[in-house]
Image (cartoon, rainbow, N blue to C red; front, side, top):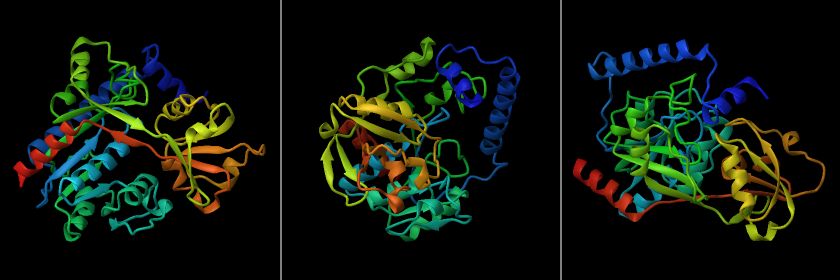
Length: 340
């Protein structure tokens, strides 16, 4: 096991972090408080756009379900008469300047998550390390609300609504700041956001933090279920129900923040999973998936956008949809209308 994986296991299992992470965590917390103070006092500039901005993010390092929520939010707002656009960092891509994505973006240039969001929703998407500059590109695209994907800690972009996603399977881990724990910001940050969403995946059980105050924050969270019961062929886009793979072996490929969520979702369909966990945002080459045994390959939709160029006939993506209560989307829409 590599050191990073060993550290993450301690975050979520026994909670006993190595001694050397404790002073680093204290230093990280001090720098975090200083940075926020600089923004609050105006010493670091906050850019306000002429459109309402919804930030979707999390306070835990690693995957929590931000991208499915961003997609669900964009589609729900469009159904309610809005014209949303999405801004993202473009992590994993090679683009050096803010840019708008075309209809068939290259994930190696723009990043896998923005490419997926653009192709799934067909809403305007802009990327850039300078989040305000990238978001400004959307103002000329006919949008009337901007969704910032993974933008909770990017305080340079002023926001009107904050939505924080928590992984229901892992919770907040041991509740400590990086690197002693998985937290980007302290648990109290959840008290400041407008909505906390609990990603339960496709399971019925969740893990709540052990601290009573953190547990209270989680029990009032809005549930999000990830629903996916079909597989889409990377070669010809044909569809098959996942039940067609039940009772048989298949390679499962996941280069996401928390691969076990994907593997467990396939096992729920009685698929005998051969696990292949890659690092988040992994850049695939054809040889990575050359398993040499003729078994079908099932992968996340995020991985599939990077593998289509060399896809084989029996490679399949498993798209998921974030399902949330209509009341959540109605409340977000009401806040947007109030801002306008």
